[in-house]
Amino acid sequence: MDHVVYVDAKSKELEKLLDGTKTMIIRGATGRKLPYGKVFANDKLYLIRNNGEGLIIAKAVVSNVFNSEKMDKDESIKLVEDNQDKLQLDKNQYNKWAGKRYLVLIKITGMKQIDSFEIDKSSYCNMDDWLPVEDIVSVKI
Image 1 (cartoon, rainbow, N blue to C red):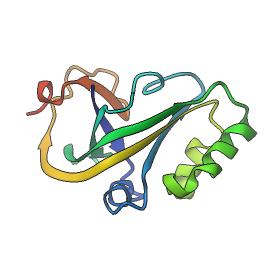
Image 2 (image 1 turned 30 degrees about the vertical axis):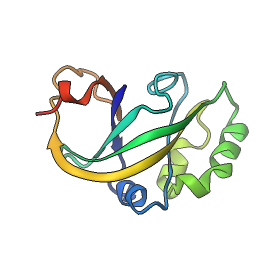
Image 3 (image 1 turned 90 degrees about the horizontal axis):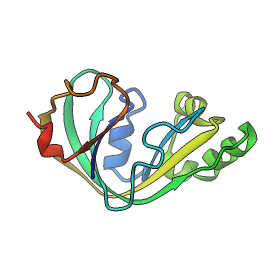
Image 4 (image 1 turned 180 degrees about the vertical axis):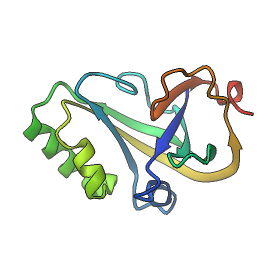
C-alpha cells in the first residue's frame, strides 16, 4: 500500500527525515483516525510538505508501526517523550501530538529524495494529512 503523507514545513520535518535526525512519524487524535490501523510494515510513504506547493518530494518505507490503545493524557505524553529522540518534535508539534488519546508511531527506513511530482487530489474530498492511495501511480500527474 502507498500513502501520501503531509509533513510540517514550518518545523522542517522533511529536512530532518532526509538528513536522518528524524526516523519516526507521528499521528494522533481523540479517536481512531487515519492512519490508525491502516499503515503496515513495508508500506511506502510519499512525502509532501504542508505549505501548498503540492509536490511529492521524497519517499520512505515503513519498518514498524505502533498503534496505541486508548490512553490518558499522561500516558500519551510519556509515549511521545519516550520516542522524542526519533520524532524530533519542535514545541508546536509536541503540543499538537502529546496528550492525544490515540497515537500512531511510524518508524521509517530507506528515506530518500526523489524527482518531484504532483498528485491528483480530486478523489479526496476530505483533505487530511494522510492519504492512503493504494498505488501512487493512480494519483500521479
